[in-house]
Length: 307
Length: 166
Image (cartoon, rainbow over all chains, first blue to last red; front, side):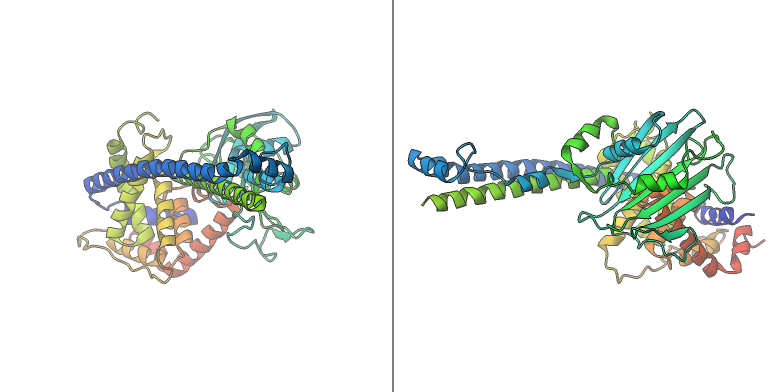
């Protein structure tokens, strides 16, 4: 018996005869789920009310500065007449317009970097906090192949996962720019116990800026359970590495670019995606709060300056 | 898949048993496993209905992520303890379960999760990477490390355990 199968069998046999209380699990899970739904609705309503209150506060803070004609005249004299009295500096505005890289834009930028532009299809992807992934089918006429790309990073741009591979590891080396590159070439399952054992070529690049970019490709349209379509995956390790080293894979991107790519696919609906969406909404809310706070501060400064 | 997008209760009843087994290998505790499965069902219920190609795979991935997020919220000083209820004496794999769970509990949570997804759920490296939000390289390293340690812990017992001691 091969090594992989013996571990699989051990794990399976250890739990297959268990008799849990299925009715308790199902009813308890559904009840908790109902509570989660109720809580989510309450949070949504609460967030709406808080935003309304914030807008009211900012409006009250800003409006008095433009309340009298005399004050308006002074303000116009001391600030640009073409601008409203409250204006966020352009650099901050630019920063506020950036968003975290999305799975859709990751896919779009990967497609843009491919050395050839043949048929591509079946776009999917998902996002976690600090990690996004996307995949697609690439068909250059020599057999369709699955391609998978992912990026790991934290909000401050530093990768927080495991340290990069060590040069002493097989397949690991340090590139001239300080990046750590781990290369894998092999069958998906080392013991080949599946009817179709696809060949995978994969690289994990931890760049000097701390961002991790991974790319994998197979000689099949799936990593398992699908027929082999070609002798080898379509791209060489050097090509994969060149793509992964591109500056296009940045954790922060412009919201316009992200919006443009948003229609490529809908990221998988999973708990983590839901969490990420909530996080992004929360970040969006926090960003709106920061903007409002800046606006209120500038309005206050304008008023002080006028007096 | 139309079936799974139908009744939540039917979906949950279908996957409850294998899900519980996965939970037990991760937590080593019968009651924590019940809690983990219910929490997993709650998360799925929250977004229900969902259309799924592989209901059990989806449920297992959600369970493992729930397990890892629970572990993150707990004290890092907490030590796992093997807690299983009384087993029937004629249960043939009780000894195997105790040995295996005890060995698994010595692994870091993430390595344990990778091992269970890879070898119990038969997920590929890329699938586990997608499930856990890690790179395929990180999953490979976790998998190799966990497997090596498990073999070390099981030692000469592994063939006996596999054959059921026959």
